Amino acid sequence: MQFDPTLYVITDSTYHTDETLLHAVDQACAGGATLIQLREKDSGGRAYLALAQRVKAVTDRYNVPLIIDDRVDVALACDAAGVHVGASDLPVAVCRRLLGPDKIVGATAKSVEAAKAAYEDGADYLGTGAIFPTTTHVTTKITPVETLNEICRTVPIPVVAIGGLNADNMDVLAGSPIAGVAVVSAVMKADDPRAAAAHIREKVLAMRE
Image 1: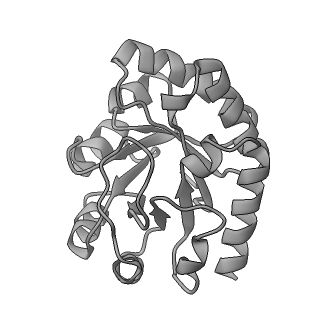
Image 2: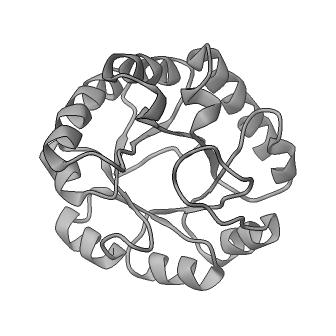
Image 3: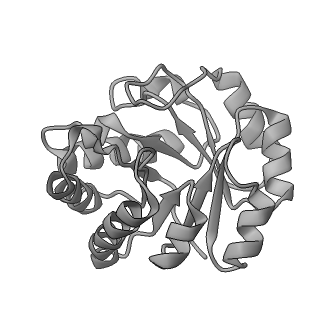
């Protein structure tokens, strides 16, 4: 599946109701998000699927691919574009086998070795970070920009920088061969998610030129 990783917006429902989350996703898409990931670390399968179906109805209107964090079963059940997995989730090779060749499989890679393994196992893109400390409830370990750049040069698939990034601190990535930037709070916590998404996308595009 073809996809554009320029601006990858990841949800965080810890400060949203379902309705405000859906509104934020809608506005992020309107502002130029190119990928949306639904991340529900604390939801059971039934609740995760119910929300995923509602989020997909929004992303489908904008023709933006929806990625499901962690849960291949939920991704299959809602016919999402794909799944993103970390080191403690199902292996990339298993996800690829379950999802088939036409879905997106993304993987977290914090080292060159992990990046090579994920690529060889069938990952379509990598998320690398955290570049900065984050305010999300996900445990993070800082990844130097030098490591990010080395990963980009090592694997032939898109690499997306993630972790505490926003429009004001992205200059640290200037000159990096990344394919895009993933953000959580910078859009999901913004008073105006549409404007925030548009501003970040503009900066990413300018940085890649």
